[in-house]
Image (cartoon, rainbow, N blue to C red):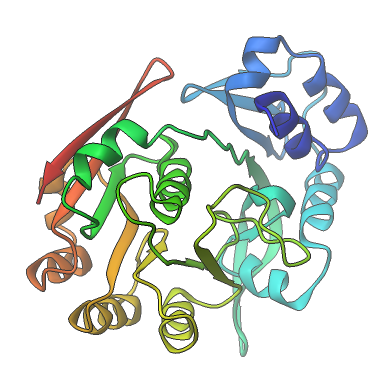
Length: 297
């Protein structure tokens, strides 16, 4: 899909009158949109380059509009209901739905009693964005690498493109790339087929936690390296340390402005100390232009 198709694919989760207004936005806005966001009692908005554009011709959002988006995206399946307890669910084509609202605790855990906001993060496929920095990072073959940036700078987009390039042999030999796609954002598997180009040598496990998906890939598909999005808990950290000691490399993302910021987070500090990662790619988004910097950790 091109950038306009990606925008339209995300906009279809909106109620029809909001979708119509979105599709009438200027071409430049649709091509560069990052999120579509609804908040109770406020105007719908589109995030572009980190700032929000309000849809001023519409009325403030009500409960019905937010509920409709969530129902369209979740399809009322058990797996999506489980992820919604954590504030998100994955939609077709890799879009990610985030929710806010009032949370209650039950015997089954936490869940949202009321939704007050919803965002549709637009999944973008930019083939070739990692070619230049990848050639710098992997001149001597693959080495475990973290992709760092603040939220919304394109970490998952770069991760996906590097999976494609590594598995297709762009940086030397082709690697068997295992993708632990907990949230379905990296490969966007639908009916067994990836919604994005993840390369000829990539295998995907989605719908499991990262630690479960990593172990499944190790046991079943013998990857040379495993790609996943941000590591947030000690179980994932422990599994990755164990796997790295078995010779498996990792490609992962993290929210951080610098390697110094990263080392202040205990989970990542432990993985760096155990040499799970030896280098990083930093992304900076300046006025919509992304810059990639390779750095040893």
